[in-house]
Each structure stands twice: as C-alpha cells, then as structure tokens.
Length: 531
Image (cartoon, rainbow, N blue to C red; front, side, top):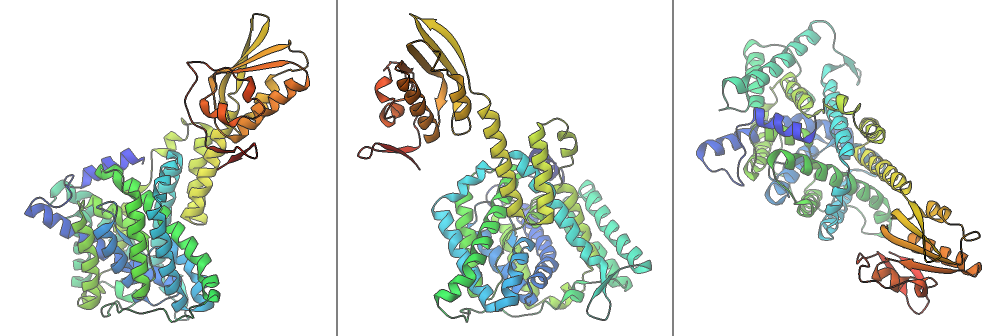
C-alpha cells in the first residue's frame, strides 16, 4: 500500500491518534501494552540478527535494549522502534569473522560518531530528495525481506550442525498456529480494542501451546536470553591508525545504512501519526544510541519498520510505548527469560506476517500500469535490489535512476521560437538550461547563416548551473568569431556578474529575473567554478 494507505491501515486497527504523551489512564495502558507487544517481537529478531552477525545473542539483545531506549527518549519521531537489524548485521559478518567482536564494538562507536556528525550538519534533510516511487519500492522490498526472514522459523536442526525444512505434522502444526495468530489479530479489533491485537494473538496462541503441551519450536530453541545488565566496556583494540583503517569502511557503510533505513522509517511513521520533521534529531539520536551501545557490548542498530508498524498499529503513538518496549526487553533478560523462552515462534511469525500484509503496497500493482514508465521501473528496481542486496544500495540506485530520468526529460524541453525585430533575429528560449540541455541549446543556433544582429531572449528559460553559463559563453564566442553582434536579454543579475566573454553583450532590463546560480566567480582569474 501507499503511505496514505498505510495510514488508513493503522487507523483501522489502532485506537486513536495520541498526543505527545498519554492523556489518560486508558491511553497509558494502551501505550504499555503496545510496548510489551513490541518487546516480545524484538526477542527472536535480536537473537536471529546476532547469529547473522556471528556474535553472542546477548550482543543483539543489548543493542535492541540500548538503541531502543535512547532513540525512544530523544529520537525524531515518537512511535518509532529501533534495535538490532538484519540490514546492519549482514555488513558486520566479515568484520567479526576477520577481526573479532571487539573490532565490531569499536566500529559501532565510530558509526555512532559519524551519525552524530551527520545530524549536526543537518544532512538528514536530504531524505526529502527520495522520490515517492523509491519509497514505494522500499516499502515493498522491506515487506518481502521481513516475510522471507520468517521462513527461517520453519527449519529444524538436523543434528549435524545444519537445518532442514519442516515436513509432516510439525509443519502442519506450525502453519496452523501461524494462521490462528493471524486470525486473532484480524478479528480482535472488531471485538475489543482494550488489548492490542498482536499481543492478544501472541498471548492466546502461547497459552494454547503451553497449556496443551504442543511440540513446536519456541523462543528458547533459538538461544537462552538470560543475562545481566549491560556493563561498560572499552573495546579492547589497539588505538592506532591501523585499527582506524580496518573499522572506518565498515563504520561509514553501517552509518549510511542505519541513517537511510531510520529516515525512511521516520517518513513512513510520520505519514501514519501525522507528524513532520525531526530528521536531523533522529540522526543525532541514532548516533548517540550507537556510540553508547558500542561501549556497552551491543552490536548497534537503527530503526525497524516491522516493529514500528507493530507499535503504531497497536496504538503506540508516544515515547512511552517505545521506552516501555526497551524496559520490557531488559526485564525479559534479567527476570523473565524462562517464561519468554516458552513462547512459540509460530505466534511471533504470525504477527510478522500480518506486518508484511499491512506494509506491502498492494496498490502498487495497479499503480504500475498508470504511472510513467520510469516510475514503474524505479518501483520494481528498488524492490528487487532491496531483496537481493541491501536497503542503502536500493535507495541510492532508485534515487540515481529517478534523477537521471528527470534530467533527461528536462534536457529535451529546451527549444526556441524565432522572430524578426528591427532587422535582428530573435531567439526566444524555452525550457531550463543546465548541464543536460547544453547540447540541445547549442544546436538551436546557426551563427554562419544568421543575420549580423542576433538577440537571445531568456525570459522563458532559467540558467541553472555552471554548465549553462559555459554554454552561453561558448555561444558568444561562436558569434564573435563570425563578426556578428549577439545580445542577451532577461538574464539574472548573477549571470551579469558571472559571465565573462558574454557579459558585455547583455542588456539590462527592469524585468530581469532575480534567481541565483550556485557557482562562484573568481574575479582575479576571470574563470567560472562550481560548488
């Protein structure tokens, strides 16, 4: 579904739009129950991602707690959930395998510092350059990734260190419990909203499994989640340039992936909760969270769209729900591990499948036939790359393709109409003049056959960059070589100051445009330079 459809889905299954903090006892209860639901869903995800990264399960759980708590308190969007994610875990694998977990902790600290710098430099605002087709592909791709990740729960140990797919009655039982969880989540909002539907699904199915002793995989089959409080720990790595050379590439990639996923999730949650802004604040919050996590033995993390969707659709719209989720997760580690380890994985898989159904943009199948072909290609491309590689690569590829398509479409818009004025030929330029349209601009003119006086009127155009200025300079040189007079009209004051050869050919007018051009002019050298 599109972002507006996401909002409609959330409105259908969540109690109401909440203010910044709960305004009543019932709202507070909703927030706490939503936090509990998210915490239960976080456990198997954090453990699984720790296994992916090749670290101890507690390293993933501590990251989920610390990153989740800090971003809940100071993040840019109430309602968002952050923690250990698969997108980051797959990058960490080679670092842990080649250098050990201590280098991972150091890389996470540096990753956090990079993210803080990005926030302080206000780089988060550039997320607005992500086009809607890229967002649509991101949503679809992430939904598929979340769904595929759940399939791992349908595999059993083979006794030789590997895993085999379930067959026979174990598979039937697992599927039945998954279906039961999904049915409860679908029906529950129609009966009562006192309890979040995902929590009801987990609770009822867990009660059936534990009460009747049904043999199905449980959380404890993944790993024990019992542990203590995370302790402060300086990464035991040499403080040297050699260490920096090892961890810096990983830290940069982790920081970029973490910020892209967090900022895209920020936008999606903002559509549902009706909030705007907060991108730079979210960058700083993610950075502080990862810096702290690296010093407390965590694997780092970022925003999680699946858990964020669980939270907002369960009624969690304030910081209370996200803080509660982090504290519940810590309590599981410290006190309730025997109980949590008895929860059937089928119930959590059912919750995540409902998240997949609610997240996937089903309307995109109709949209693909109506939108421009380039937008349709971008949607499919971003979806496929997200599934095949990672989110950051997919988003960057989508933005590049969209930008190139936009530049090509605008490059074809440059044209001119001609007229006679007092014996002079007048070219009235239409369309933007920028790096992509300079060739087309140059082809419009015929200095060899034009009369001795030529006027170029830019009233219907806009000079956009240094390439455009260079094209005007080149045009002036061509007419100068023919011994003909070229007059330029309706160029902005910036153009007057920046053009060198053509500067004396411009005509001042009261209706000259006043837009600026993002270039510098070196007066002493008499050359043009771009930012």
